[in-house]
Amino acid sequence: MRGIITVIGMDKIGIIARVSNLLAECKINILDISQTIMGEYFTMIMMVDMEKMEFSLEEVKARLDKLGEELGVSIKLQHEDIFRSMHRI
Image (cartoon, rainbow, N blue to C red; front, top):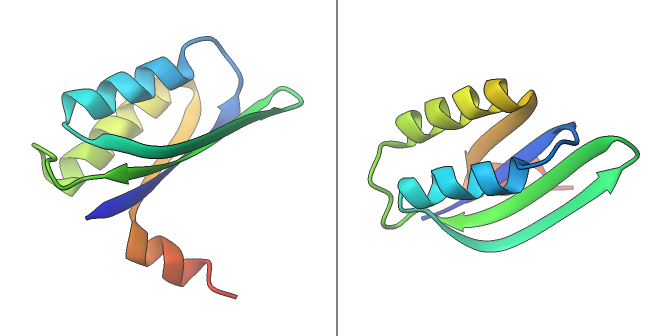
């Protein structure tokens, strides 16, 4: 099972490290990552493998929400199929 994680907010030191550490704690593997700074805004999208995930999807989402609040960014996790259907042209 794969997922898509998006992170958007004001740029600051440590966003990638904190998100990556949380994913490692949950046994979620990062398959691909793209990030950029647009002016003062940080944007990142990750494709992740959740096959070995040690928590429920709801628990991981809650942990990412909490981390997002701490960092002052929006962090969203969606199952890849849902992401694909939402972004179909």
